[in-house]
Length: 256
Image (cartoon, rainbow, N blue to C red; front, side, top):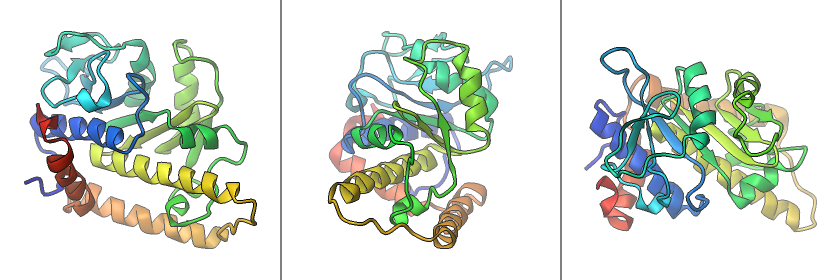
């Protein structure tokens, strides 16, 4: 049974990435065959950069550890067990972020209704609760430029992202970076909850209570300390272990 520690092998990384796809599907955060979650593999024997990506055309609930595709930084296929290739255009944002941010093992992009809604308002995520306080003053923004097929946009996305791990793509969705797949998934789930809670709270027509800056900042640092302990010290991650156990029941075929 997975214990929630960081992966130490390619097979464990493949397991974690397949789990991420299935968890996003179970949470209702997928968008048909669109958006991606990518993971950085160790460099190849000649130093080539390698990444794992979902096969083109599969729903997130069809992705398994065995059918993940290995691509280079351009999206060119290196290994394709499933045989459907990848959506190379959809990997352009991911490749740019991976190549600029070597701390990012996982890059996760979503188009959820709540995430798109909050990305479409000037204020973005408000510190209304414990979930959203995690992201206080830690979200980057990138203005919408159309469907992300323009390679020139990559440099602007990377510049806007800076050293942050969470970005709202204005009028588009969310982008999250994790030092592990587990961290990226936890950030994505908490951001989605934050967006859903914000949409719900503001829809009531009552007066929202916004947390004081000092309280929101304190809470964000508490989250960071907990995440750092797991990522930097390789402590067990009971939340990730619990999510993997969820898949053992809900989607046991995710390993392929």
